[in-house]
Each structure stands twice: as structure tokens, then as C-alpha cells.
Image: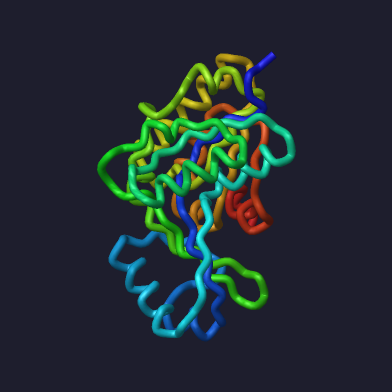
Length: 229
């Protein structure tokens, strides 16, 4: 019997969630409903604009893969999450959230340098989420962070599709798939976002290799991935 139900691989992000209007998005020149990768300067620029409006923010641990394994853990599935955080306030906040959710992880090996990733989540009245993500140290997630013994002892490995944006992250995802298949376990991949499919489809295909067991996607992502749109 395997030790874990799910072994997840993905970004470690601390979300700043703010309610906005469609007009706010337009004035900030942000594309509604999409995930955009931004640098630290752009993230602070957006936050400064929102502070000028007097908006109220809340903080929560996030990242697509993180949200998945935390939800699975709350449903009773023993879960492991592989990611990368820095030894800063956000990194400690993220590690505490994982622990509180009962998720085992590798975050005890936080890097003393660097900055933990952040995501500015803008929520409009129709509940649409628009994300501006600064990956920071998450962009350097690599094979070195993989606990292959834990991965081999998981019924499922879950790979966050956003890993295709990083050369080291993609290699880690491909290695994780290989470890799972060698152990006779199952592989799930999330396509994550229409933009990921549009610009990184070849990377997605390289992660899937000769076949996966489950793909998570919405209709738009499925149409783009299968070239039927």
C-alpha cells in the first residue's frame, strides 16, 4: 500500500486577494480572466494602484497545485506537496498553511535567500478571477526538490501545468512522471490556463510523454489542446 494518495508538484505562492470592478481591470491594463506572469516591479505597481483606491486585501496560500493537494487533504486523502519557498515571511506563512491542512511537504528545506512567490488575485463581481503571478523562487523549482521515494509511494502524482513556463520546472515534471510510471502509479496533469496551452503546448506534450491517466482542463483549454477550436 502506498504512503500517499497524491503527490503534487507545483508553485508555492502566497495570494493577495482583492475585490475589484471591470473598470479597475481596464484602468490597470489587466486582461480579465487570465493568468499573467509579472515581475516584482509590475506586481508592486499594481498593488500601489489598488492601495490608492482604498481596497481591502486578504492573504492566503495558493498556487494551482497547492490548492489541489490542500483540498484533497481536507477530503481525507493523504497528500504531499513538492515546491520551493524562501525563508521569508511569506515562505513561513505558506509552510504553516500546508502543515495546518495536514499536507506533508519539502518546505522545511526553505532557501535562506530569494523571495517566495506571490500572486495578486483580482476578483470581479461576477466571481471571475484574474491572476498576476510573480513566481520568484518558485521559478527555480527543479529535480533537486523532488523526493522521489515519496513520489514513488503515491497512488497519483499531480503535475501543475504552469511548470512548463520554467525550464527547470518542466524537467522536474518530466522526471516526476517517469518516477510514477516506473512505480506503476498514475499521472494527472492540469492544463492550468488557456494561455499555457496556447504558448506552451509542446511543453505540455513533453510532460505527458507517451500518455497520462488524467488531464484536468476547461472547455477552452481542451479545444486549444486538441486543435479543434
